[in-house]
Structure formats: structure tokens, C-alpha cells
Image 1 (spheres, rainbow, N blue to C red):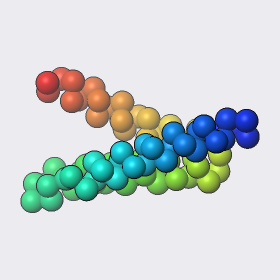
Image 2 (tube, helix red, strand yellow; image 1 turned 180 degrees about the vertical axis):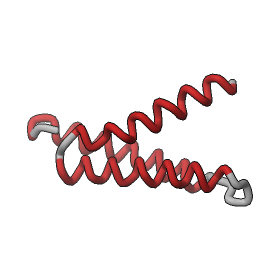
Image 3 (cartoon, rainbow, N blue to C red; image 1 turned 30 degrees about the horizontal axis):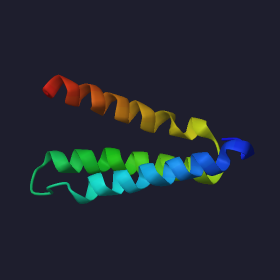
Length: 78
């Protein structure tokens, strides 16, 4: 993430982190699958924070793969 785009990227990542935290807060931990989701969401949370601190977009590669897979799975279910 270059300096010229840093402010825009930082704003977008902060928004994504708020969204991710909302997803984590709405999990029903009485359901076993919630532990799987919280693990995935935590991984993505760490990747986004790393990208913000390092200013390197490639830090997001793993998170993008997770969310792409989740989106694909949710589409199949709906």
C-alpha cells in the first residue's frame, strides 16, 4: 500500500475491521461451527492489521482467499 493511497487504504481497512468485528460479535457460540468462523475471522483480522501496519497489500492475500471461499459457500447455500 503506497503512501499516496495510504489514507484511502487505511480508511477502507478500518471499515472492514469494524464489519469483521460485527460478524464476530454476532456469532452464536452455542453452535460448534461458530468456533470455526471465529478462527477464520481472527485470521483475517490479524491479516488486515498487519496490512495496515506494514502498508503491504500482499498481507491481505490470505484474508482475501478466506472471504472468497466464504462468499462462494454462502452463495451455494442460498
